Each structure stands twice: as structure tokens, then as C-alpha cells.
Picture (spheres, one colour):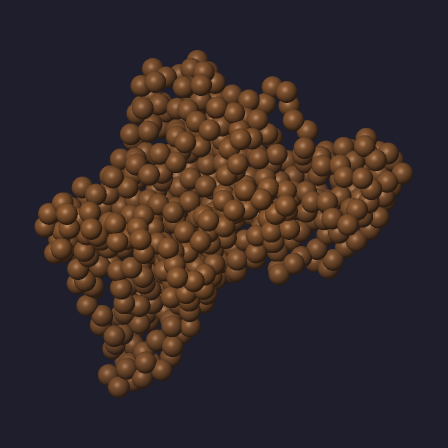
Length: 536
């Protein structure tokens, strides 16, 4: 669709006209029907607010089009600054409604407001309706297995070697480089942007702080669940840690190595903990500068959007990567233990299942409801997230479940759901370390105690930094695997496996977000237990 522009005075009739054009455009770019009405009403509310503050003589410039293949809606009005999202409800128990709006904007579910060069601007980058990615992924795996077996039958050994070394290996290497190009920058800007967005806890009340603190804890605790799974099913190298002094020495050295010698080598060499250190340090410094760092905050937001856009484009090529990876493994006869691979997948599934049941059981106990009833209420939103591999696509179903099925107060849900969707992904803190340790076992590589500690710490921060887009977790693997020194084949195999597991991880995160939010709401007396116990 070509770029469309137009300017209209903000009369009531023109607001209706602009609103109709916006709805038609959102339909043309295939925005999900569940989001379309809400987005139109949100933009219409902006226009009405500008009309009240700037009068009907103010002229609104409308731009509809695409940037880098992604649709956008831009509204501009010259005049004094009028932020339509700055109004604060006196009863807002979370201290600042703009935080909620900013979180929704990061998910592509609300517009973003800026004031530049005397112009009020609202920019919306709506997410298109998500297609089920399981179909192309399943086709890629099936086709790779069939063609691989066919090549083993009809091609001589020399031809198989030529195909692998001349075509497949360079192709995989090029794709790995493209992922590595974005991975370090993605971690840096994701963590930085998250700190800038909600790091100033002075804008939040005691309730907001409790919500953030509880979910940070629930993101950290699943890692302890991975430890018995790792110790019980994998063999670690305990050399150098035979006593407490050796363990303390390794952990202390690990903490000291977090500080880089310069700001560039962590990105060049891919030192994940140092990248995280730089991002946290930068975020804290920006918060200290406050309003003086407005330009830096704007640049950080734009760069974060750019990096995530690149990750999004790379993730669209994942079915092709999975095909090439499996096809190469078949024709080269790479010795992969299917049993060890299945053990890793089953352990990840077991850990995720336990987390879901523990939180659901805790909610059932607190609300004096049956566990089966709680699970039935959570299941529809869980399945939307599972089928789309996107927490943003399941946002409306998640909100409906939280408010109308679990009994969470609307204001609590309006703040908590976008916050948890953006930042908290407990399932990833289980998947990442078990994936890393499992791949080390598959490729017969030992893991030391210090390496395990690094993997756990990196997994925690990666779970917070992973973008909420299909395949977003895949970009984290290069950062995660580097401390273990795993070969490139391990990374390509892990990407193929994670593509399949990502659906379940996203759904598990949505499940834990809903149950965790309900538990916090109950502790704050913001949960209607009668609704929670109501049969569906």
C-alpha cells in the first residue's frame, strides 16, 4: 500500500472521517480484528484530546504507510505540548498511568507520543495478524529429513561432501553471523530500554513495587528448579570446586570479570555478562540524569526498535535455517544421540509443567477454588499464546481472563498484564540453562561449576531481555552458548529445537503471568474471589 497523507482541521466531523480512514487502513494491513477496534478508539481519543486542548482550528496531519515493510500510523498537530497520555487518574493506585501506556507501546498495542519542534506527534506501529508458524516449521523439518535421506541414496559420497562443504556450511555460517550481529546489541538495548522505562520506581506506589518485586522473584526462582534437573540427569566437571573455597574463588573471579576493560570488546568478543553490565550501568546513569537525558532516551528507544525489527526479519528465515541445519546433519551423518536430545526436551517440558502447576495450585489454595477450575480458566489464553508463539497476540485473551475469569481489578490488570508481557518470562529461565547443558551433553563437552553459574546468571538476564516477538529467544542463544565454547553445530541444532519449544515457552510465560498477577492482586485485596470461584 502506498503512503497516504492528508491534513484536516480537528472538527468533530473530520475526527470521524480520520477515524474511518484509520480503521480502513488497519484492515488493509491485516491487523488482528481483536486489536483493530481498540486501536481505532485509542487514536480517536488522542484526536478528541487535541481538539479540546488546541481547539477545532488546529490542523492534524495524517500519514499512513510502511517503513521497512512494517505498517505505521502517524498523527501530527502543531502547537503547545498536549500529551494525551499524561493525565493521571486520582484513583490510580500505581502512581503513573504513562508507564502502562509505554509498556503497551513497546508491545505495539498502543501509540507512542512525542513532542518535537513544536509538534505533537503520535506514532503507531501495529502488529499484523500472526499466522501459525508451526506449519512452515513442520514442513521444513519433514522436507529436510526426506531430501536428506534421498540424497544419501542417490548421491555418491563425494557429491554429499561437496554439497555440505561448498553450499550448506557457508550458508549456515552466514546465518550465524547475521544472528551474532544483532545478539549483543539486542541484549544491550533491551536491558537498557527496560531500565529506562520502569527503572525509576519513585513513580510507583507500594503496590507497583510489590508487583515488580514479586515477578522478579518468580523469574529467578525457576532457575533453582533447573538445578536438581541438571544435577540429577547430567554429569558436571567439579574440578577446582572440590571444597567451598574453590567454589567461592570461582564465583568471586566471575564477578570481577563482569567489569570490561573497554566499552567495545564485549560486543566484538560477545562477552554476555560484560554486555549486561554495560547496559545496566548505562540505564542507571540515564535515570540519574533524568530530563537532561531526553535525547539519549529517544535515541535508545529508536535503536531498540531498529534492533528488534532486525531480529524480527531474521526470525522469519528460521524455517529455512531449520531445513538447512537438519538437511546437513542427515547427509553428513552427524552423530547425534536422539535419546539425549529427547531427554533435554522432556526435562524442559517437565520444568515448565511444574512451574505452571505450582503457581496454579497456589492460586487455587489462596482463592479456595479447585485446581481443575483454575486450569480451565487459564487454558483459552494459554492456547492462543501457544498457537501464535506471541504474548502480544494473546494480550486481549489474557486481559479478559485476568479481569472476567480470575477476578483481578481492572486497574491492576491494565498495569500488570503489559508489564509482565514485556519483561517477565520465567519459562525462559528454565529453557535456557537446560538447553545449554543439554547441548553440551549431546556434543560430549563437559561443563564446569563456574560455567554453570555463568549460564544461570546469563539466562536470568536473557529472560528479561528477550524480545516479545516470534523467535525472539533464538537471538539469545549465541550469547548463552559462548561461555560453554560449544561448536557451531550445537548452535544450529539448538536453534532448530528452540523453534519448536518456543511455542510452549511463550504459552507458559502467559500462564505464569496470569497466575502470578492474580496472586499479587489477592495479597493487595484487589482480587474478587467470588469471580475466581465462579464456574465456567
